[in-house]
Length: 305
Image (cartoon, rainbow, N blue to C red):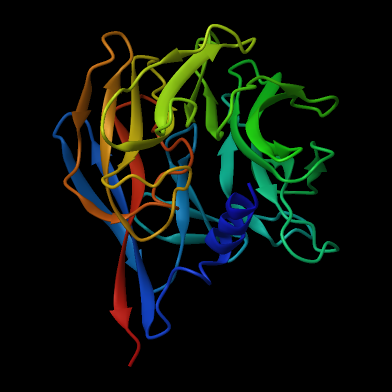
């Protein structure tokens, strides 16, 4: 699994994936389920990732250069969120169902090289509370009652799904199969944890009950499917699908498309055409509060003049 850890390090700073003569243009879009159209909210000549939508519906949060930033729905940058002395945040962050707390993954400044621990802060920002004792840990979901978080973590050479009290404590391992298990997210009703897994020999979407048992495969197609994000209505999930098989990786700068899973019928439909994206496009839940829209990021490269 050393190649996976190397990948996480590279993806955080993109030092391994961008040609030296190119610069990144990041474009944040809002997808409307009713019209089935994407609308550009803003684009900038820099790298940003992984939007979250606030629970009041008024703001978006993105990460860039190790920090979280807040935007209004007109595309105005409202500033950087105070995360104390932490400035190595990666693209795994999100908001509690009650809208009061932000959870995020970050390296520690005192640790040389790559690390990733999970923290929480008040939504407005503040002193971070350390939740996980071990690294690497990558946050992905919180239960609707706010009592638990779920995350991907590497322990003893294998990446699996873990569960932890949202105030900290002793983590509980939920998956034990060979291969990467990643992207865990609670359904709003608390019944399931959805995640992506390589246990079948191809990255597909799975779900298990909230205690970690009765795992069930949801997608069975030719794509590499990642990051199931459950709508607030508990009936749909948006996923990112790599057109070419990426094995156990989810790199930046690949051909991808966004697709929708009907969680009742398990039918999967395309939402977008193929575009240039991947890591950073939709790593975390980005649905608006009423489940009619979600946000995501497309990328392009520009020659350095």
